[in-house]
Image (spheres, rainbow, N blue to C red):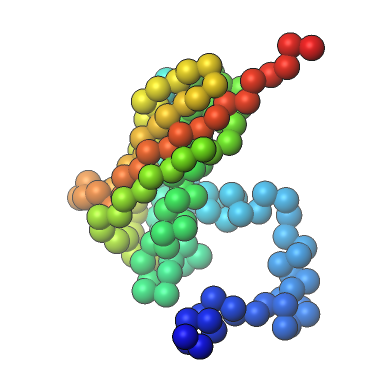
Length: 154
């Protein structure tokens, strides 16, 4: 149990320099941390396809794509697909279902394909698939449901 505890309690606040650097990061840093280096390969109404050469910052301790990074990519690309249909907001994520089938490693190019399945007045649903770009092998599939904020008529 101590090993498990130590693996998640890597205390950056014990080192004032590290804590200060983390606290000094700009607003919305996390999103840019995940999508930096992303290229848009195709964009059309209801669909966006991007590619990314996997950087070390998105890897887990097994040197493969981190599940949290995958989820963040799903959230960002799903929201971008929704915006291609003219939504002025991507709202807030209500639900995400993510299934993993394979891994990707440092330097490997992946493709992230987001497609809108349903666009209502208040709810949008998108499917996002992560694939190995050179083989098309599926890394992960996800369904993202978002609430689209309704603008006030006042």
